[in-house]
Image (cartoon, rainbow over all chains, first blue to last red; front, side, top):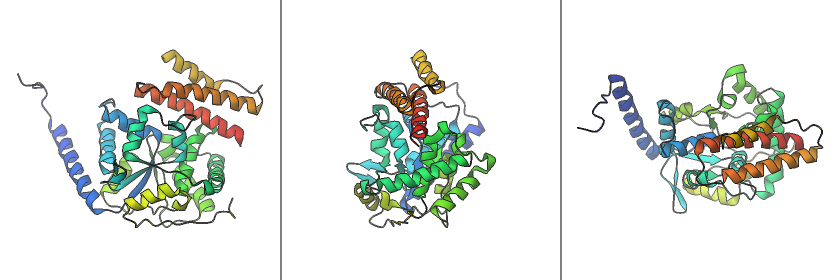
Amino acid sequence: MKKNSHITPNSDTKNYLRANQKQNFQSQRHNEQRELVYVAPDACILIDIEKMKTSRISKAVPEYMHSLNLLLRLSKARIGDRFANGSVVMMLMPATQEELSNYHGKYHEVIEKILNKHVLIAEIDEHYHSQFQQLENTLVKAYRDRGLFSPNQTMDAKLVAEASIFNIPVISRDNHIVGKENDKIGKIREVNESILGTYQHQAFPIKIKTFVSRVLKNNPSPAPDNFVYLSKNTQKTLKQMNNGKVKIGFHDYKNRV
Amino acid sequence: MEELISQFKDLIDQDLQNMSKENQIEFYQKSINDLDVLMDNKNIDLDIYEQLLEVKKTLLSKIYILKE
């Protein structure tokens, strides 16, 4: 008797599988053609990727699993001491670094593998640390004053603030970060514009499905900014990923803080 | 383990207003260190890790608010 002979895929499943195969092929083609796209995943996205790799995530959410799978395929991976393949750079913001590490700054073992393999740690240069922190604190306070995050959600506010400084989108599955209620995006836009200035294309928190879809469709992505706040090591890695072409902008926010 | 997670979750709602700010920060930091000990276990179940992470995030948030 054949294994699983009692399972007969219905036409919905077949269509879904065909769509998946098409998107998997697209992701492969995409990686060969596109400029780099930067994204700041929150901790839960990374945990879910790890769950997916160890088959722990519930198959009751196939669409979400599919998005995670695509994100992984699209993301650059570390081979040796360099990042290769992929067109998406997952950058770990300082807030998420703090959540996933212990007091000594060492990452929890269960999440270390995915960080080592697929994620670039966004280290802040010591020289700019205080300036970056001041800017971040200003944003976090403003988000809270606009009712975007409760006091107990300050770590999420910090993540959004940090990603906003670099003008890269956050991806999350938490509604209080990516939900559209109460014109959240409009309020984040207003706060960011008042403190960071106006961008031609501003980055916002979005759902993973939306992010992956935009990447595959080659939609224009926000141009990252303020990478000069990053440590020399991080900047060097970014340049290597971009074949020496990464553009680093720097705006002086001293007057705004 | 479920009981331990529940005890950590209770920390979030604990009323520490009779403590000074410094003592509150110290209390939350110690709790976070205890959480990290559990989260550092390489064999930890990812669902449990995620639950502990949510508690840690809230406690970190409380510390940042106290330090403002």
